[in-house]
Image (tube, rainbow, N blue to C red; front, side, top):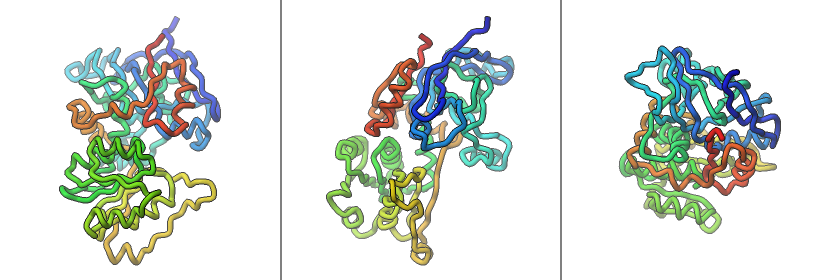
Length: 355
């Protein structure tokens, strides 16, 4: 009889359950990873609520920490060993297109959330499973932190990519709009890059946390003008980089009022308008031309970003502990999603222990 494992499968909106399937075996150039934890990204939360459309059945999960439990015959034993604690990086880039070949895997021409990974019964990213069969190209060793913290390395890698895309310089004024987990991480990383960091959010608890972990100033735009306060804090200069980590077009309009001449507005989040809100944001092209304003989009991450993110977490440069908002056993995966979509958490984490 083949060995089995459990995997969490989406079958429709608000419909996810734990199912049993055959467990894969390490072979060739692939290793078998026992998943320790999978954090519930907003992307999977939107699959759960039906906002992100997928073909069912679907296995989500891409913020993954685990342990190597088997090596294929072609895996280099000088680099990898059973027992290595690892973060699973991007499993979806094709590795063959122009973007992958030029080390921009985050922009892979064939990036497909619905691809089917070897060893899994259904398509999807697969992290909500007890085991995954992956190549070593998407594995990164970590140390000194818990598996729950390590599962948040993936979103940190995306923030590393975002901050490096903005090319923040020492002493730059940086505005981070939104203090959810992605805004919190932007504030931490930007501060480590030597920026003066301003955060904006109507949730005081979140701005207090951002200040505790490095932000220099906090603004509540429901109580004061964001633009006027930014002008005051930057002595009339405004910000060289403005990160919009929210999904709302109305907030993006505010971002453009806070950017300095020759500055950058970075669109970090996907756009999901509120009911009745227009998705398109009008921008004065003449103003952008005259004052050299740059708009940059950033999504996902590549291997270089993962290497840097893992190093920062393993060496204590970035602290992820505050963002583990709750942990749930694999058998409670539906309860975990119900908690996550309430919107008050940073990251809800599902633990896989095989029991």
